[in-house]
Structure formats: structure tokens, C-alpha cells
Image (tube, rainbow, N blue to C red; front, side, top):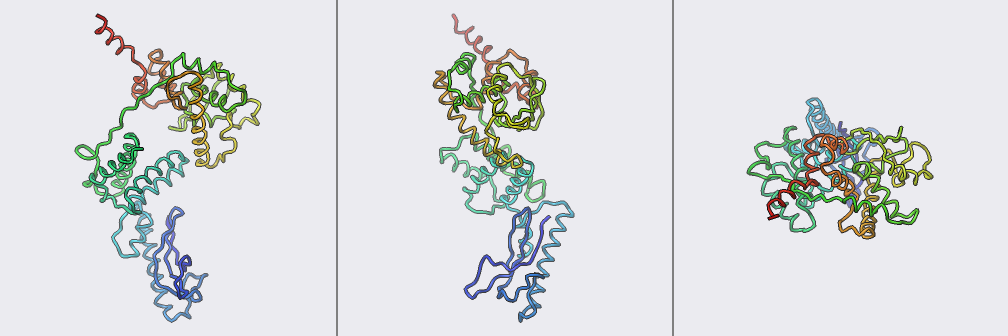
Length: 404
């Protein structure tokens, strides 16, 4: 719930030494101010949040303060009672006597704050970056939902394409976030469905297909057989990559969060960061060999298996996210070197461990079993993903026509 308080705003001072009386509205640890009149500091009653009686216009000013505080409090109570969404600007606009409006960026900021409260730091950082890209294009801090038109979004897309550094998929992901916030605003009654800029014959969102290429069996063996210096960063990188691959391509962010007490009776139990699912996998022999390498650094059961998060603040999801992101960037650098050493003519990154498992699995494993191994919520997701690596039928069909 928002709070309202009358203060003497001392962050700005007039040339005659006076400060402005202000009504401060605070919500979700963010404050905005509605300014009244300027007075000398000696006339402000800090304890009672009012103008001292010694001021010649104290009665008028205190009535004005009481009126504005009451207006703000009444508006907040009305919103809270009806369970309607509101932002600080809505309260400030009431004090200004203006029509209540909600800025797109106000709703976006609350969206980011909510993600942080839910400990979804990676999503919060990613979505905040998308919002900042849109804000950079708009070049102002307030944007009403009515202003988000097809024309505006088409100009935004052209702006991103002209930059040359933003992929089509990244552009669509920004549009998906804008659409999500617009739909949320419609449900809250602060945006008009008739002005909705998305849909058929309007802005259509279509994610481009991405090419998924994994390593084959021979390439994995060549990587495994490399002679690497004990204790070196490149050996550690290979260990993390293969740990992910051996366990059906567990995401590196989840691998780094694994602890020794996640291992029980030769099985690994862990919670998947992307969808919060708990899963269990049998630990292959090759994984035990990797674990042996790190046992000397084990302090206790709750200690991380790999070193990247040992100094992270476990109660700070953002700190964990930053350290994980830094580690992945380092891993990808060394994986490029490993690829050259193993004579692999493919771009090898941490994510390709998952693609490699899919590529080698091909059609050897049933889709239902792959769904379980991949931890997908829907079988259709598994079938769509695995289709990237199954080419035999198409290859045979082509050969049947061309072999004449």
C-alpha cells in the first residue's frame, strides 16, 4: 500500500534560501512529489509535518497540506478497497487535478519489481533490458498505452533493424513483453481493447525458427580425449560442459547451482530453474569421475559442487544471476578454444551441450522418455525440439529420388 506524507523538500533550494513544502507519495520503495509553496526552513514543524503558527499564512498552508494529504489517502484507499491496480503517478495526477492515467513504463517497473520479489532475477534483468531498449527509442519517461500504436511499433522495429545488432528473434521477444504488459493493462481497465495494436491485420508476432546444431558422437569423444592441464580453467570448463551433456543437457545455470547434498543414492535431485520443476536422474559413471575431481574442495553437504557460486549471496537472486552470467561468458570463451583443440568446426557454447544430447539421441529414444529427460511440460515441445535433429526419413526420401 502507498503512503503519503507532508515534508519540507530540501533537495532543492531557492536563491533566497527557501524550500518547497511537498506531498511525498511512496509505493514499492519508490517516491514522487507534489510541490506546494516555498517557505523558510525555520517555519517548518519537522515533528508534526506542518507549518508553524509563526508563519503569517500558516492556517492557509496547513489547510492546503491537510486537503492534499486527504485527497491522496482517499484515492489510495479507494484503489485498495476495489483491488484496482494503481501507480504513484495516478496519485500525483489526482493532486494535480488531472485525469488519472497510467504510464506504460510505470506498469513495466512494477512488472520488474514483481519478478524480483518472486526471485526471478534472470527474467527481471532480461525484461528490464528490453524495456530500456524501448524507452531509448521513445526518448521519454512516460508513455500512455493509447500512444502504443501499430505505426509506433513498426517505427520501433525499423529502428532496431537499422541498428544492425538486434536479431529478429530479439525484436519479437521485446514485442512479446510489450504485448504482455498491454494485455495486463486491459485486464486492469487502464487500456482500451479497441486500441490494441496486436493481432491479425495488425502487429503479428512470429518467432523465427532457429537452427539447432549439436555435436555428434565423434566430436564428443574428441573433446573427452583431450589432454588438459590439471587445475586449469579449460579443464574445468570441459568438466562443466560434459556434466551438462551427460545429464541430458541440463542448463548450465542449473548445473552451477547444484550442491553435494543434491546427490542421494547415486541419483541427482534438483529443481529446474526455468519452470521450478523437481526432477531426479541416475548419475552416469562419467559424472562420478567429474565429481571426484572436485571432492577435495567440498566443505560440507550444502556446499556447491562447482566453485562459481561459492562466494555468492544465496539470499540475493540478482547476485547469483550476475555470477552465473559471468561464468557462462568465461565458459563460452574456453569452449571456443576446446573446439579448436578437438578440431570441431562448429560454434561450441554452453547451450550446445543440450543440443548435442538431442542430436545423438536422434530417434533412438521415445518422445515420452525424452520429454522426461528434457523436463518439458508438454510432449509437443519435445517433439518440436527433437525434430531439429532427426533427418533420416528426409535424407532417405531424397536419396530414393536421386539414386537413379
